[in-house]
Image (tube, rainbow, N blue to C red; front, side):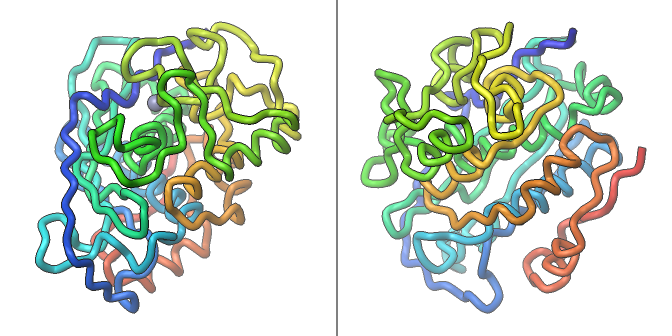
Length: 307
Ligand SMILES: [Zn+2]
């Protein structure tokens, strides 16, 4: 059984610099969420292709900024170029197993009461990349890490996480209770927790795992007994702290992004899930159209991954 610690966040390693400014939007060009992956070594061309597809998948689920006109565009501010720029690289972390990857935001921008990621970083253990690719867990792990860059578990309470107050606060760090209304609503319906007043967050696993993932049995060591409408146990949900294949992305995890300031769209969720545990991860045709229509997306290399 493969059971790897998905110690992904390592928030303390990264500086999150709030850059406040006058955000002069250019919505006709910079509307919507655009994720740009910048490769910085240690990844093969086939591995790089997964990142590009993962970016298109998240862009299909997280489609716009609820805080107002794209807050990441301001020509006078560093990194505020209208995109979420993510640096991705393969590096030696801790040898085979253990930590597979780590990721988080590096700089951000605030608008409309929400704090958003402007730039972030994803690092994957070079000792594990080959096996993740061959056993078809790489797509899920990249999707997981990218979610952290976009704010999952890292921007739940900027005042506590980064010392930047005045923005979204959906998480109680003392009780490990997540109270964002959109994800909580899905917790009640998707996972049959109708009387819940919060979504339980992981308390185990130490820094980087605790307080930044949905709760499961410590170490991912067993079934939670909590299943979604399709009978999938929470243990296999993508945004828990330990990887258990096959992974699935819940409506709850997508809805979580609505709690932290994004406009979400569930239309492509089933498609994403159908490709989450495969080596072949074609993009939805609608995404190809989107890519061609988005000026700022031109530099992103989007292509199909073939096994
Ligand atoms: Zn994680």
